[in-house]
Image 1 (cartoon, rainbow, N blue to C red):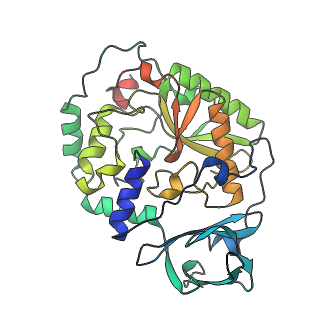
Image 2 (spheres, rainbow, N blue to C red):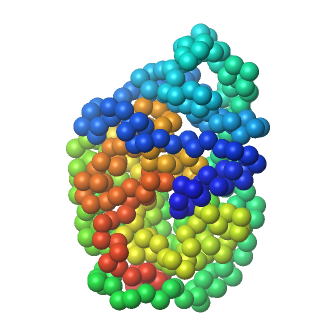
Length: 348
């Protein structure tokens, strides 16, 4: 899941035609949003059910999102166009010309399609569709994959400035929570990749993450960690298990990754009062435009929370990966070599 062009190429493969990039500049995506402001109220449920990505058979694209309690449309010649509500599912756009917008609901009351003028587009959960395509072609011999990956060798590199000093993130702050998808079957490959649920970072990055956690606590939030250091053999397993047609979504083991160097972390926020993960603009590890750090869609509250996470992480030396709102690289990542130690070895 590397470059934005890779997302777009695969969306092109899915649609069989031209696509519209569903991303904008960070400034446009978060107009007036700052981490210091209070979180906006969540969008009402009767609007949230209509929010998302819509596609036509001719690959026309439309993003419906919420801002300040009102739906907006992006695509089909519309740019940040507010939708004026007429009924529960019927809206109108006043500019550049008055246009009818009619949503269709499925039997569960969720959006199934929308008609804008004469153009009908279906609601698409692009990320889920991509994962289904990957899993359909995944080699299911997890044991064989693991053995082959462990026997392989990472690329040779020159000596690096710093020695490995990985810290178990469970020791950094007791309020940090964990949901390690790669230790379960709940991941895009569909089977466990880690021997156990754990997350590690190089010591400077781990200490910086502790400062983020303490800063967030004063705002009512904590960190929920999905991944940190990733042994190189797991990156090799991603590559070998994923169908060649979907290699655009996984890191090339011949290059290694910042996760392999112990300086990348995948994470989100959780609410300290409820203990539940917050709702962001897209799911963790989702392979769709909703994963972009500057994605316009979702709700105002989701974008505010995404920006809060980014601002707190950046303040402590992390940089968001543009294609993944949850992925942050620590500033000294290039000082470290590609790591090969398994989680079993790290636990000894």
